[in-house]
Image: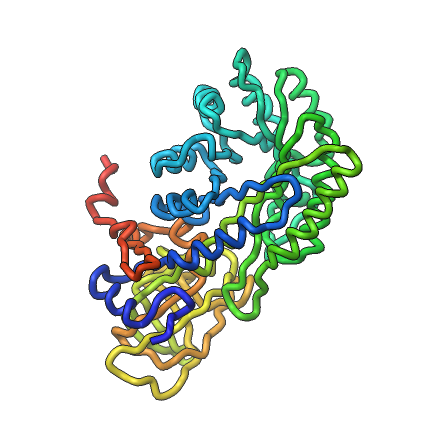
Length: 420
């Protein structure tokens, strides 16, 4: 059978179902490597570092694969820093940009070891300044909110006046005063607009960011963040990295000719690297109907994929029939196994409160339902353990065809192990 969603074949699905059960995440090593190579080819003028936004999928084996391809790490919490280190990633390859900073002694230890940290508020600047007082390591970065954002909805837009991420661009003078008071040296400036595929937006973001770099004479690196959108369904558009990169490269070149400063570029893709390299396999456990809707009930749902109920996000869905040949397609709502009316995967785009049936092959109990585009922000952002369902297993489909388990299914004892 041809590969389903470019990741896994029907025969492999049957093998995975029989050996590991459902629900389960399946990732394609070939597609992960392909996406990593594309990101590393992002056009640049004076050097490039690609950091994997590990919040997209922090499983150890995935971190190790990306590190092997030459990617560094973007961590969104100190717990992610520690998790990356446990995966064997050296601290020199990790940058921490977080809403919540660790204790001051952890900041000092992290930076002394070669880690990079970014202040995302005036308060964080002071916290880092106090942590580094008396230290010979004084270099750090600052994240600035440039007043520009992009995304398919407000929840994926992390720039602009409605976003709390970063220091508001009109507070740069206050930031510089704190930097001076604590004797800090800002060598990296970070901006991040959100999620989008429009080259014009990325060009404008680069231009705005470079304008702010001019206010920091020690900055040698500009980090434009991530948010490079990929199409999970045909109606969406994948970011053309070459086109966006060429626009950004031209801005870096113009900046050099204007200031004689060569800036190193950093980007932090997450979704782009892994979204379409993963699928969820779930079993159809029931088929039922009302006077208005036909429901396909699966042994998965919000416990494995929360994006639809959070954002009205769209994912390709396929039904793989076992023991019967579907005679026709049926307008169906795919619903999860949780005792929660909102546990639905087929919703109106960007409107998570509205169901939208999909035309799917007639399903029966025992069939397999495949959810595509489930590599990014699914396992890493699931509502696991709701209704006490265990955390799902994960497997890697290696390039040599071997199915490698990379996370075993959680047990009930593990789930309640910390309870007293």
